[in-house]
Amino acid sequence: MWNPDKYLENLYEKNRPKFKFDVRHMDEYTRWRDGLREIFARDLGGFPKPEVDLSPTVVEEREYPDYLMQRVVYAGDVDLPIPAYLLKPKNASGKLPAVVACHGHGYGSREIVGLNPDGTDNTGEPSYQKNFALELMRKGFIVIVPELLGFGDRRLKEDLDKEPNESSCHMISTYLLMMGKTMAGFRVNDVMRSIDYLETREDVDPDRIGTMGISGGGLVCSFAAALDTRIKAAVVSGYTNTFKDSVMSVFHCVDNFIPGVVNHAEMPDIIGLIAPRPLLVESGSDDPIFPIDATREAYEKIRAIYRFLDAEDKIDSDFFQGEHEISGRKAYDWLVKWL
Image 1 (cartoon, rainbow, N blue to C red):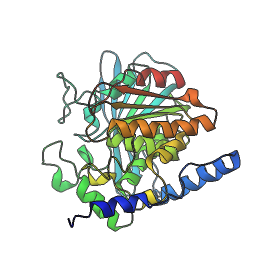
Image 2 (image 1 turned 120 degrees about the vertical axis):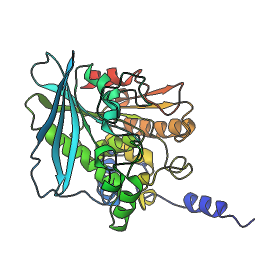
Image 3 (image 1 turned 90 degrees about the horizontal axis):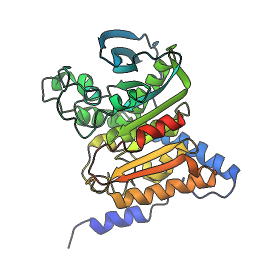
Image 4 (image 1 turned 180 degrees about the vertical axis):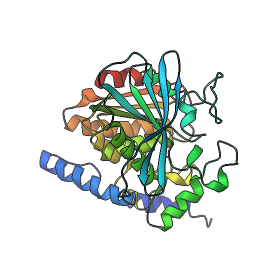
């Protein structure tokens, strides 16, 4: 009888997010959009202001029958290098569209480019992430896959000898929280710096850059697209929901948490900042950590923002029979269509 369940429920229900979407005119929309972007960036803890140039360096190159793979490293900030895989279709010419692919929890960037944790080719069945970076490359995109902070080669030194799927999420996230920063903010910065790098390449069309991510990578790609308008189209897989029904109700890694964010907006409002740029939401019917009913509810709220902007043709969904995994049934062609 002394449990706090009701108290917590009331705490959320009585909350009135300042930037809940409720606009009737374009001037109201502009104030809503600009105000939410500003305060959401602040909620994320802001972003590093790099004091160093990108200074990209190719540290590895491989050739496959239909594509080329590079391992490139560029600066996120002082003492914060970002290694990434870059995939390019063979026999491609001119400036190509590009996609920043954001991996979810697992062993990092190698998991979505067809490699094992030790860097050897994975000839077995792919994980829940379905090698989606490779699938995008086969659709004609240059694909960059940054190693998101806390995974793979960007784990803390003390974690590098642990199992590949063991991340440094907890220690880095809590450290950053004590500094008034968030893991989500730093990972969004990983995407922004990756776009900075893509813009330096002569084979990339800077006006045709998109992003796709799943799970924690869905958080990263959706938040990055909400804030960075250089991203022209997005696919968010296994993430779109409400904070209340996902990270606040189901056990999630601490890297999902952003202090005070629900005082300002719920997840659909934030993802709605992507409008009117093309957005595809995909989610499995049996996803245990991002419940499908809340995903459908969130999707309708986001679609209302697109409707207000007369851009309903630029939002779509793929609610498929499956669990917490990539579908791809619509996603790859969606990005081809818009990029």
